[in-house]
Amino acid sequence: MQLCPVCDALLPPPVMRGGLPLQSCPGCAFRGIDLEQWAYPYAGEDYYASLTDAPDVEWRHPFLLHRVAGVRRYQASGRLLELGAGMGETALALAHAGFCVDAVEESAKAVSFLKKHHPTVAWHQAEIGDFLIRAPEGAYDIITLFHVLEHIPRPRRVIAALPRLLKPGGLVVIELPNPDGLHARLKGDRWHYLQRHHVNYLGLSTLRRLMADHGFSLLGHEGKYHFSHPQGVWWKDAVKFLLAKIGFADILCTWWRCTPTATFGRSNR
Image 1 (spheres, rainbow, N blue to C red):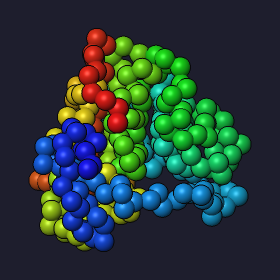
Image 2: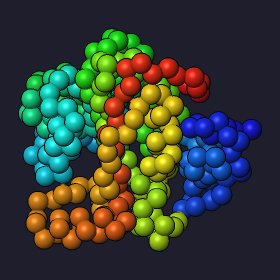
Image 3: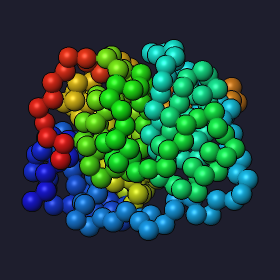
């Protein structure tokens, strides 16, 4: 018997979609890969194993600056924790915008390179769950998770750990693939975000329930046509902005405020 990692409802047997055994929660509309049939695709290897000695880490891309603007819309400055930093582009963009940035990334190869070439950020090589356990209480004004939760088998554990690390009224930013967008619905099993390393699919209503259970209130949300929107070509950006507005949004970005006096009753299973 498997329970939903968001609302604890009993999950039905999985249905194959895009070659993946997906379970859909009848209680909160959570969708995810059956964990009894799932294995982490990068277990035992570095995600950036093929990284060259001098990769191009470009933090000035318009979509990265758009992420920064989204953070600054709700919090103009402060100490920021970037979870799942990858090759560090977002963390560097935030640091150049004046935030004091800690960034966590599992890849030892990526962190070694970033520490050597981009010391303006405090880079931490760690598994996210391990870092959250040992990070100091009330250390951060902002925590960002850009395309992280869809890779986490039990997302409640991550969300439950965030309030302890935040200062009162702290900000959390979450961006992830949007399973409720028209692209996902029209493409069905051919939706390109149905991938084995995307173990969770959280639409806005499901994410709202998960966050509310741990004391977070929604400040705002934005649908984006694709991962790297905007691109900096005005007419392409305008067309894709309009398409996202009418529902063709493959990416969902959300901003949340942590309630200082919140109490949390759910387990962190």
